[in-house]
Length: 77
Length: 159
Image (tube, rainbow over all chains, first blue to last red; front, side, top):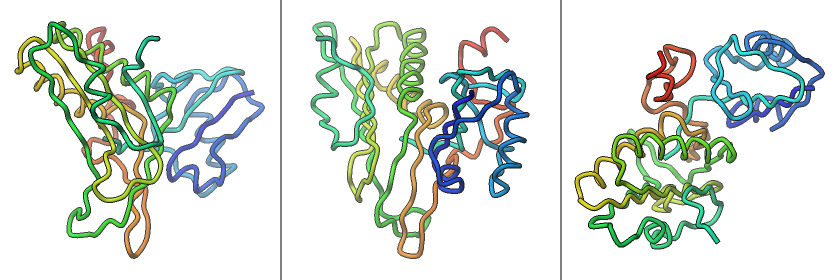
């Protein structure tokens, strides 16, 4: 099971801050594609990701037990 | 008890408390950056802001920034507190304190910290205007990141 965290507008579009999905050993790119199919309102192409709190790329492998966060362009400070 | 140098809180920030975290007998200068909520941005009136963070990762990124500062200015000590939740005009969103034996380093390291916060720390703000709301994206307009993610200095060196 992969734990998915959503923030800012992504959270509002999906209506959840957290999703748990029964997937494993998928790339970030595959997971983005999968999520976009489940939630057609989402566009994740320009969205950064972090796997287990470290910035990841589209080719990073996500395993069962991992937490992946979708990180829209940030605006802190 | 050790003091947490980096914090995400949902209460008003006590500036003096952040300053005290970097105070030590070798300090000859402390710079404080206080980021506050501005009313007018590009001619548009903000009613209030809402900040959201990914706290666990945000703290890690604050630590990363401190590490980068340590490498460039070993004598600098940095503490950062960012507030989340609803903030009104003139409320303090972020406080960065840097101490060092001499002022120049304290100024430089402090500016470096706020620049990096805007690049790598997962915190978002939502503008509430009279006519609507919007989560604000990257204000630096450097999206998309050429490497698909922001540059972390360590990786830059490895590359």
